[in-house]
Length: 552
Image (tube, rainbow, N blue to C red; front, side):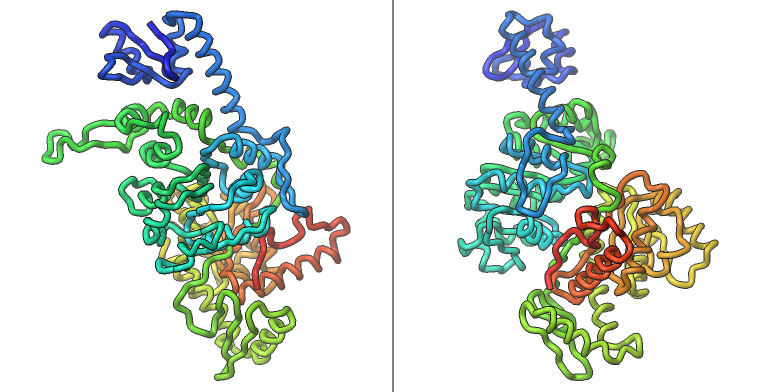
């Protein structure tokens, strides 16, 4: 028989029948010697054994609720309109995403890469008027992107702190309303994080906390918050990797590790017959459709790029401001100032320089551009080298969502270092590569499942290279070229005839560096070009080369 009691469906029957209900997903309560489930869809399979009409009615009620939640988890539009700051607009599917988040205390936002998960999380922050104490934990490569996006999309002014290291005394000062820190330093603040009552916790790329024993996982999950938003375009490859986050976000449903492991991880003993016999193997995957239904009915919203492609437009460009490394030679730049050296003479534009001061400093440095090794070239090359670890981290994270990706760079030395890191997992095209060789390179990038990254020199790839649009829709600019034309031609390797969706470009720029200046100049050149040649040009149609904000 089946009976509903205290938010659970209880079953009692013969020992032979118990094998059936266990296979359906019922859990054994040893004290009561009964089987139970919290899943209405599981109980529905035994509805004919319900002992009363009340149980049948509860099953029907729960199933209607589940179906409604699942429909919302796929929604690409909403009747509820959320209002961003003046001058900005949410896309229809982003309205639906914000609506999903604000209607529950804990959410997994698992939209495909490039669909604006950060913007939707900030949209929810705008909706909750009583949020004043926020913790954001994310990869180091996107710390400053979070800061900039909050400044851009938040309707309320917040005192924002980007933690700069393990010994940043400002973190526990009580002043910041929003604290942004990367996973690598979070454990240094574990006591503060665990003892602070947070209004909202945002965990970006939460697949970083899939190891329940890791210090970063223990630290992040020690934070107690009224509301939680976990973001990732690729939450897990195996069900076991979801367990720490699910246990944290929905402890009522995911309250028994072994039950979860048996049901979804194909739990078994490994190394049978060896000295290691008796250890457990959690690497399997079973009942995945059921797990997906559970996630969508309670926690998760996920839309694919293919679903919302008509809303995205032909091109989407996103600036990712990288945090500035600590150990730098003084001729490069600092976050709030600009320092360069030329033949022993220092040229400096003061903190937050005016455009005139910046232009003047650049003009001095470029008066003698006769050799490749002048100051300007050295600054650009040094910036490209310094960024390599951060760019690699970004690309590796992107590859969790994308099967293949393009990386554009400018300097040969930088390209060679990326090629050395990725080895057989990449192909390279730079200056001097003949057309026949290009075709072979692109063919391998397309056909070899182990080849994940295409590394191209911006100018060399800009012409005479075709076929990339059939392989991927995503490109990362690890460096920037002065020439708007060269940049546009590199972009068009992805956005051209044959591309079935919108093209996505990430520009990885060190915040406050020479690249910031270059990016602004490129944006101005793009604007002037379109104003001259495109009669119906407007910013709303994607005329700016960058959709994000760049700081001087």
